[in-house]
Structure formats: C-alpha cells, structure tokens
Image (spheres, rainbow, N blue to C red):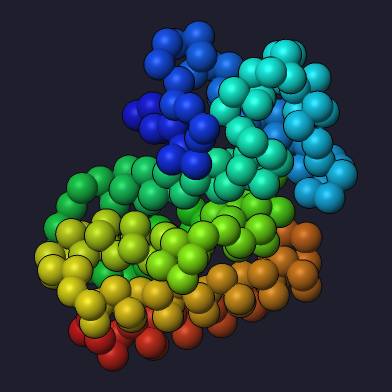
Length: 205
C-alpha cells in the first residue's frame, strides 16, 4: 500500500520521517480513543498520552480535537479510495457493477474493522467545511474521478451529481444497517446494493 498523504487540515505538514511517524501515532491514538470513549469525552491530552507524545506535539499539528477528527476522516477517505483502486486493479473494463460492489464492500469492511471509523468515517458524524467541502461531496468527488476512469467516461457534472446522490443514499442506508445490527444488517445491505444498481443503471447502462 502506498503511503497515505498527510491530511490537508493540519496546522503544519510533517517534513521529516520522525514527524510523520508521530502524526501517524497521534491519529491512531485518536481513532482508538474514539471507539473507547466517544467524541464528546475525547481530549487532546488523552490522545497525547495514548500516543506517547508530548501534548505540544498534538498542538503542533492540530488546534483542537475537531481538527484532529477531521484529519482522521481525511486519512480514512485516502485509505478507502486507495483500497477501492487496488481492488479494481486500474482496469477500464466498463463494468460499473463490479466497481459499485468494490466501493460498498470496502466501506463495509472499514466500518467493521477500522478503529474510530464507526464514529468519524469520512467526517459525516462530525461535519466540517462548507457545502462543497462537506464529507459526502468529498467522497463523491473522489469516487467520481476513480470510477469514471474505470468505466471509461469523463467525470462531467451530471455524473458527479449521480455519484453524489448514490453516496448520500448509501450513507443513510448503511448507517441504518448498523443501527439495526452491530455488524450491519445483511438484508438492509443487500437492499442498498439493489437500490444502488437500479439507480446507477439508469445513467451508466
């Protein structure tokens, strides 16, 4: 797996390898603590203690826990799109159904296994930014560029809008599935897959 680039929400991007490793430890600690105590009880001091770094190291990168959670969300999105790209293997076979399955399956896997993802994912639970910077716009734009290449189609405004609607729909239904069951209700997940295929098929077939 390629190194994940540093989040754009940082006060200061790491330059040296040691600094980058420290940032990774901070975000890993943030993710673990989110699972353990939740966002409200999360603190920069607790993250520093868990990461084994001075509190000043946390503030070197982040002004507050909100910025830290947003950086974790950005890292999650980077890792998610990288996983989808690896699964598709850089092919341009035009099979959008395979691509949709890859997107949904990788998201579900991260939902079940990635620390802190259940609370932060791509920033939807702790929204940041304006309309164009909102989490699902970020997700739709990234996936739009990736999937447009896979199906051999230019990512025009109509396609971006279609992907945004699909992402918003999947986001709501996957959260419903995980409210129904800790591992995600399989019946709701399959309904989500069927709905996405029916909707996207109107545009992509």
